[in-house]
Image (cartoon, rainbow, N blue to C red; front, side):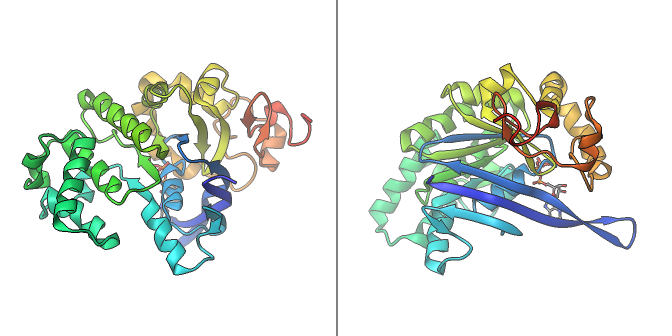
Length: 324
Ligand SMILES: Nc1ncnc2c1ncn2[C@@H]1O[C@H](COP(=O)(O)OP(=O)(O)OP(=O)(O)O)[C@@H](O)[C@H]1O
């Protein structure tokens, strides 16, 4: 049993088709995964793949339509409030956009103190020590100088560091970092990734690292030289293995396309934002409309993840059970 498990989790949302009609779709479909203390899970996929929804499910902000979220052995949506509360403290999100998620009218000190006091009784001296430690951990130093500042007095990179400190303030065991450097100036990204990796190691955190950007995933991965990775498309896990294995030997046609388009991944990202709505398929493989290898079976059946050389959900490699 892992520290955290998702068992067959699906999330169904509705979107508008035309003026009056609504259509249900899977933002996540049948997602299962397991993480132990200290693990790194990298989540790769384009915009709309369901990465943020997955992150929100993992931190308990999104209730699954079906399936189970199990933390420390408890199904968190079926258990006592006390267990859910502890889980919400232990699993924290670093949001994508520090610009909109940090309150503009509060100082760094107020921003960090609020979550701590929500969970703990702590005296003034200890609280101060804790704040200084937190700011040093995220390299906002000299820490004393930052305590009285407001978010607008911080640079983009410093804002994201503060956002990281806020997530760490309640001593979580699991951190979900959702595109943690996407909104940050390119020149500052490496520094923030290095700090995140250092923090992960020092606190032995379990970390879910969400990104659409393969070079960033790769850089982060190489700070540990291991990292289980899932590739997502249309809310499904379409491939799963260690990142280097996926990049060396990508099996799913979508993963291949994602890698091929890497130098211009931001263009792909923009393009897909437009495409994604009419691409949603009702039946069969969700990637079949874009897939150069689509076969008849892909129109009618949805491939499930199965073990080939590593896990993949694609009929090119056979069907579940056929490889055994
Ligand atoms: N609350 C919601 N109601 C309806 N649809 C939603 C909701 N939240 C997300 N979606 C849709 O679900 C799909 C998956 O969204 P999600 O944000 O999880 O994708 P993503 O991979 O994180 O993309 P991005 O990086 O652009 O955020 C998208 O089509 C999105 O528009």
